[in-house]
Image (cartoon, rainbow, N blue to C red; front, top):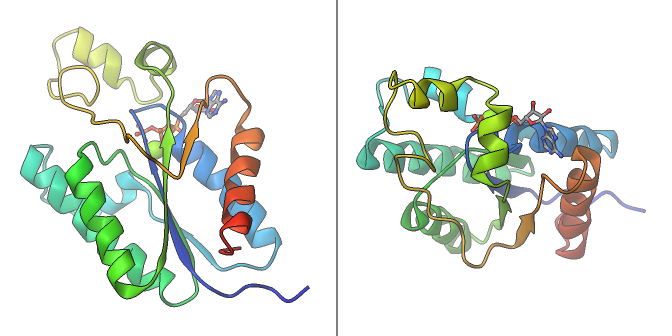
Length: 181
Ligand SMILES: Nc1ncnc2c1ncn2[C@@H]1O[C@H](COP(=O)(O)OP(=O)(O)OP(=O)(O)O)[C@@H](O)[C@H]1O
Ligand SMILES: [Mg+2]
């Protein structure tokens, strides 16, 4: 079989601790094993450089998502699978990224990692939920800051009801179905 060389962006949106990064990394491993070029644009790393200086207001979150969307599209249009595990809480921000990809004719998939907030706050990988509860932090997405869940994502993953590999496999299958992997 000839390897498909087309790039695509896979945006994984969801609450803090939903499993976005974990699933993106598992998918990256699968795709690399098949010889695809893959880049994971993780929110935390991006905020250190590309989005340094941006905070967590609505405008700054929007700007952060647009910058990441811009870079993801550049990578994807050059044959890379750009995996983006970034919260992206606002529907209009995500829509703008989808439109940019559409306009450029670049593959784009929106994936909702739909782990409920109760599960996320138990996992609390970065201790954010605990800090919010203790009053040490405000503006936590899904708790005291908005999260607009996608109404019509390309895939909704119930990541609390299945294992990481199962989620990665479902995403991999979707990429293949859409002719993107
Ligand atoms: N079925 C599952 N799918 C995904 N992650 C799971 C699952 N079960 C447990 N986990 C754990 O949940 C945690 C999810 O953390 P992860 O950093 O991937 O979340 P995130 O969505 O990237 O959060 P953030 O927005 O804060 O970066 C990991 O520690 C992971 O091992
Ligand atoms: Mg993450």
